Length: 401
Image (cartoon, rainbow, N blue to C red; front, side, top):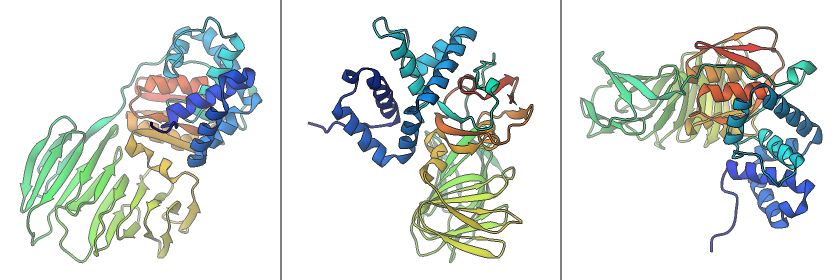
């Protein structure tokens, strides 16, 4: 018989909701349920932080008030929000306080499609939820282009598979699900370079000739040889990429367009080198890498992030949730007290929209997660319900204080 356990964040969210209801009726949450939840939180400290939030009565009361506002101002949006957390209709037996408290707990969880918004420095009026009437925008998809050494460009997508080109001893095979694979047969004397580019609203994977796997985020570019045959393996990155480097004696080097280089021998790390971000962020998940920038170098260990600006010193900090930095490759937005503008830039790249701020939003942040496959209207409604007032105008998100 399989051991009973919590398997994912959705089940953890449900367990936390039942814990809150169990404060009102102990029969709803057993000692065994508590042991299972504790075991999950021991393995997922970020969810323990969410648990501490939902166990705060003041925050629960605020969430309940926001739900009441949502019911009165837009019943349709409210019903959609309920469907996202598995509550399709009002329970007939459970008292209203049970119902509202359970839904409030779900809204405050770092799981599924719900954001936890940092309300510091907000005037009281901004805590009231206002649901914007929005035109829907579909989420991004797995698409890219590959530019061959001769300048020819091939469009890639996740629906078509098979051999698309041959360059010397390298065969380019597009695979269903959004991956371009370089299969090297024999040795190759000269270095032949290709470039894979994703647009805004697109992601793609590349399996390099040495077995290294690269995930490319939206609006990113990777230039690389079709086969590595020198003393080093070197690629160039613009934008964001996640690397799982195949271990070999030749060091693997990522050159960014922002004068930061990452050197490793076989490991997993994320590089955020977007030109519209204030600094390059290199986050190490496994192994070790050396980061070089501005004449300085630092060796990272797992759980550390190097921050390198073009004019600032190279800094290293410890992360509580390094896996969250690379959650985009697994189909998730992950925010951990992320600056609101930084979070909106991530959302804008994926949905290929622009963002306009009407008023001062300094000091505001987002904590939580959301799947990348949701339509933008879902995020807009939830952001409004949690205190970030925004609306969608054509392909522009307008954020208000």
